Length: 106
Image 1: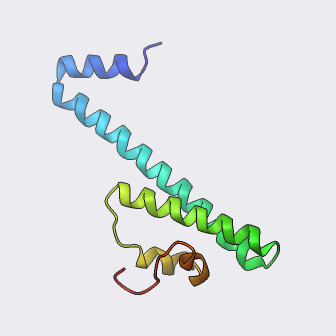
Image 2: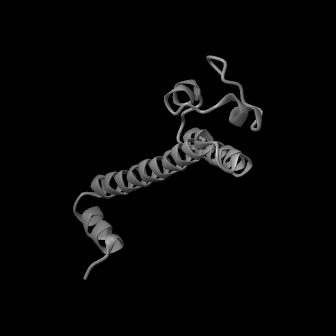
C-alpha cells in the first residue's frame, strides 16, 4: 500500500506544484488539529478550576494549558489573545500566573 510520501512523489512528477500544495495542506491540517487539542485542554482546566474542587491543582493545570495554547497560537501567527481569553472565560488569576494581562490589545 503506497504511503503519503509515495503519493507525493507521484504527484510531484505529474504536477510539481501540486505536491507542495498537498504537503502544505497536511501541515495546515496538523496545525489546526494541534490548536484544537490545546484549546480543549484549556476548556477542561478552566472548567475544573470553576468547579472549586482541588483548586490548586486546577489552577496550575489551567496555567500550563493556557501557556501551551498561547504558544501554539503564536507559532501559527496569532499574536493577540484578547478574544480567546474572553471566549474561553480564562480567569485573571490564571493569566496573572503567566505574566499576561486580560487588558484589550495585549
